Length: 280
Image 1 (spheres, rainbow, N blue to C red):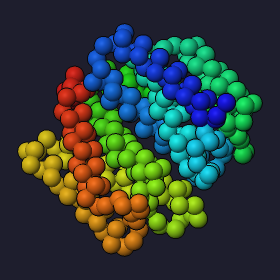
Image 2 (cartoon, rainbow, N blue to C red):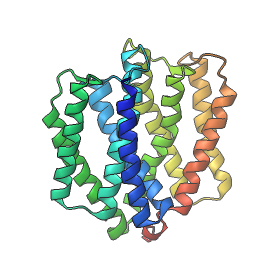
Image 3 (cartoon, rainbow, N blue to C red):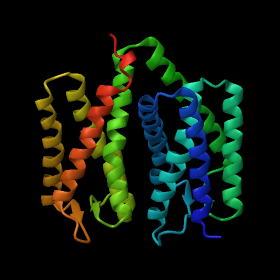
Image 4 (cartoon, helix red, strand yellow):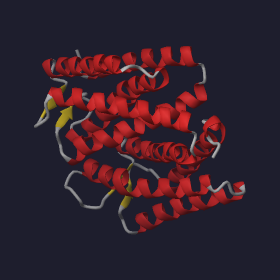
């Protein structure tokens, strides 16, 4: 059986969990924001372990480059499984016992993936996954409670900073996988890892803060042009420096359209979701 089918299994599990959560909670718009929030922090956490510390490797069998394999495996595992489980933990405020069961379940999945050789450890151990899962789920549960019960703007704003980050980071990861664009900063030799480290830990982090600044100021909508201009101008600057490089007939105009669409999604989410917690 092709390796990727095991990863499809993660998508099915995540879809079932998310579908049940939506069915019980109903508020799809808010759930989508929290799903992105959980996905973003799972991406950040694993990016440190996977791309910085090189702790293990995904093997979906779609690419010859090991770090391209890691990117697609990382996206599937975190967006499908980790984020969906975190969403359920947040919305249902599951007990520590249930979180413990989830941690064991994640470890069992990891052992299965190791046995069928669609995933491998470098220096990582399965028990570490269990510990990290438990901590992550508890933190997500607490964050949700703070945002919804304490009702301060700062926690809500931090949610939208992470949402802004993942919405502008995701197209970059996808475009890399399709071989359309990369960021060459020469931090490491591998082009996929180099691009991911630069955009995920520096470039898009800064851009997300700029976007958040203008969202939080509640200025006239015309001011939303400023973060778009800043993002596009930064892309152009990096392009002129040959840090941002396009391949396979990809063009700057296409990237500008993606940046504009991403910013529009961020603005709409901030405007129409999590409204009940924006009171102080």
